[in-house]
Length: 434
Ligand code: TRP
Ligand code: ZN
Ligand code: CA
Image (cartoon, rainbow, N blue to C red; front, top):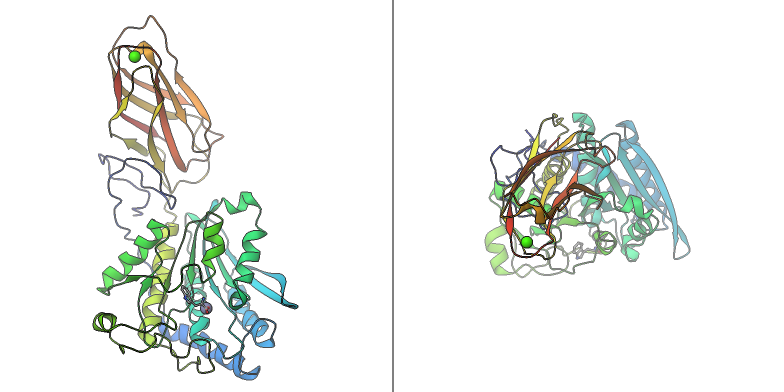
C-alpha cells in the first residue's frame, strides 16, 4: 500500500502533502513503507570499473571537452537505451568546447509530476573522478536499471540526468534548467542530487532543502541505524543549485570532500579522524581504489529507496476515496475569507465531473456565509452565496462540483467568508470525495 497517498479513514487529514509543503493543518504523515530494491553493489562497482577504464584510455580523465567525457556518456547511454529508457543528449558550449547532458526518461507516470535524479558525469582534468563523481553517476545508473528490472509503474514520471561540466561551475545542469520552458519547470516535483557518495573516509550527509526529500533520506538511514548529519560543506556547490534557484524542491546525499573528519564524526561513522573525507578530491588518485564500498552500497540503496518512495508505486487510487480536513478554522465576523486545505496526491488525471464536497460549517446565522471550493490552480467554484434572510444555523451540506477540467492532485481549499456583522462561526470539517 502506498502510504504517501492512501489515507486511513478517520485521520484528521486524510491526504498527505506532496513535495511542496502547504500550510494545511495536518496529522503527521505516515512513514513510507514501499519496498525498494536492494541495489547490487557489484553492479555499481562494475560501472565504476568501466569509468576508470575510460579515463585510463583517454589521458587519465573524463573532463569536459576531453574524449573521456563523451566516452563516459556513451557508456551510460548504452545501458539506459538497452533497458528501455528514452534518452536524449543535450549539447551546450562551455570554455570553447561542446558539453553534453544525458537525459533519460522512464516511460509512463504522471507527466505533471516529474521526479528527477541527477549526478554530474564529468571529472576534473587532474584525474579520473571515480568518487567525484563516478560514484553518484553509477549509483543513479544502477537505480535506473533497477527501475527497468522492476518494470516500475510509478505514479510520478521518472527522469534521470547525467550532467556535463559541473566542475566548471554547474554549467550543464544550469543550461538544462535555464532552457526548460517554465511550464515544464513547474512540473518537476523534486530533484535529487548525488555528487560524491563513496568517499574513502566517508561521512553520511543529507541536504537540508525540501523537508519531504530530507525526511525520506533520514528515514532510510534511521532504518540502518546509521546517524546522518546535515550537509554543510558548501551548500550550492553542486547541480541541485540551479534547480533550487528555480524554485524546484531539491535534496541529496554527500559523503564528504576535502574537509577533515572530526573525532566525533569518526566515533559515530568509523574511519580516520583528522583526515579528509576524500584525500584524493580533485586529484589524480581519485581512482577506483578511492571508493568506500560500504558508503557506496548504502548510498546507492538510498537512491533507490528515495525514488521508490517519492514516486509512488502506481497502485490505482479507486473512485470513492475521500480526503478530509477536520481541523477547526474560525471565521471572523464580517471579515476576511479563511481557508482549510486538503492535499490530494497519488491520483492520475483530472478530478471527476461529480466531485463531491461535504461541508460542515457551524454558524449562528448561515445567511452571512459565502463558500467556495478553490482548486489547486486557484479556480474558485461557488458552493453557496450569502442571503440576508436565511437566519438558520450552520451549513451542513453536500455539493457536487464539475471539476473535470482540474488535475486531481494538489492543494484544494474550502474558502469561507462571513460578509455581515454580528453572527460568527467556524469551519468544523470538510471533505472531498473523488
Ligand atoms: N561539487 C563538488 C565537486 O564536484 C563537490 C562538493 C563539495 C559537493 N561540496 C559539496 C557536492 C557539497 C555536494 C555537496 O567538486
Ligand atoms: Zn563533484
Ligand atoms: Ca456575521
